[in-house]
Image (cartoon, rainbow, N blue to C red; front, side, top):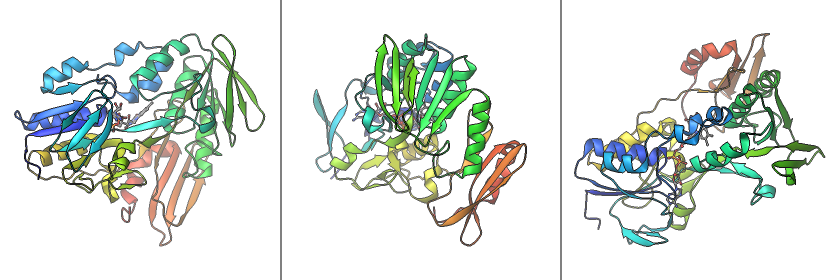
Length: 383
Ligand SMILES: Cc1cc2nc3c(=O)[nH]c(=O)nc-3n(C[C@H](O)[C@H](O)[C@H](O)COP(=O)(O)OP(=O)(O)OC[C@H]3O[C@@H](n4cnc5c(N)ncnc54)[C@H](O)[C@@H]3O)c2cc1C
C-alpha cells in the first residue's frame, strides 16, 4: 500500500518533467519533489534549435534557467547525471547507477529520442539533434560548415534546412519517403512543400537512403546513397522521426501502445501510483492533442489530490519554414482518401473518411490562412 501523498519522483528533466515540477510546486509548498535527470537539467527550448544552430548562436544563450536556479526556485531534490536503470513498480523503488530511491508515486517523463538510421548507428560523423549537448557538438561542427546533409525530411528537418540555406549554407535533405513529411501526407501538398523549399535553395534526395558516411579529410565526409549518389559534405545531422523512449516502462511491465507508455486520460499508467506524460506517453483518443503544459497542470492537480484531465485543444501543426508556408492536421489511421486541389498560389488537401467526413488536411501557400476554418470542420471522433 502506498502511504504518502506528499512525495513525487519524476524521471526525466525535459520539457514535461520541468513543467510538472513547476506545476506541482505552484499547488503545494509541502510536496517533496525529486526530479531525476539522465544528464544535466537546465531548461531550454528545443523548438529554437533549428534557427539557433543555423545562426551559430552560442548554446549558452538558449538556457532559460540553470539546474541550480530551477532547484532553488521550485525547491526540488534534483539529481543530475543519474540515468534511471530500472523502476520496480511493485516494490516502489527507482534504481540508478549510483544508488536507488524509494517512491510512493512516480511520473515517467523520459521523452523521445531522435533516431539515426540503422546502417549509420555508432558512426561518429552522424550527429542527432535532440539535446542541448547535441547542439553544443553541432555548434562546433557547423560554424565552418558550408554544406550540410540532413537525414530525415520531417518537420524539424524542413525547418532546419530552410534556416541553413538562409544562413548562406547548402542543405541537402535525404529521406526514403517520396516527399517531405513522409507517406501520411498526400503527394501534391508534400511536393509543394518540397518545391517551395527547393526554390529557397534546399536540395532533396528523396526515395533514397544514405547507407554509409565516411571521413574523406578533416571535417569533411562522403555520404553514399542506395541510388549510388556520393555527397561530399561538412556535417551530417540526423533528424529522423522521433520515437518515444519506453524501454524503462516496458522492462517495468507497464502497458504500452504504438505512441508510447499507455496512460488513461488522467495520465495513469497500468500500475498503481505510476503516471507518464509528455512525448513518452500514449494518451487515449483526443487526449493525445493535449499540450505538455496542459498535461502537467492536470497531473499536478491529480497528484495534489484533485483528479483532473488535461484540456484538449486539437490544432493544426504549422511549420516554421520562412520560405514555405505549410500547415497540416494528420488524420488518424483509418480508411479514407485524400482529395487535393491546387492553384498557382496554394494547395488544399482534404482527407475524407468513408462517410465523406473531413478527418485531416494539409495546406500549402496562401491556403494556410484558412487553417482555423479547416480545423473547425474536422470531424473529431474515433481518434
Ligand atoms: C530539433 C527539435 C525541434 C523541435 N521543435 C518543436 C516545436 O517547434 N514545437 C513543439 O511543440 N515541439 C518541438 N519539438 C519536440 C519537443 O521538443 C518535444 O515534444 C518535447 O521536448 C518533449 O518533452 P518531454 O519532456 O516529453 O521529452 P524530452 O524533452 O525529450 O525530455 C525527456 C528527458 O528525459 C530524460 N531521460 C530519458 N531517459 C531517462 C532515464 N532513464 N533516466 C533519467 N532521465 C531520462 C532525457 O535525458 C530528457 O532530458 C522539437 C524537438 C526537436 C528535437
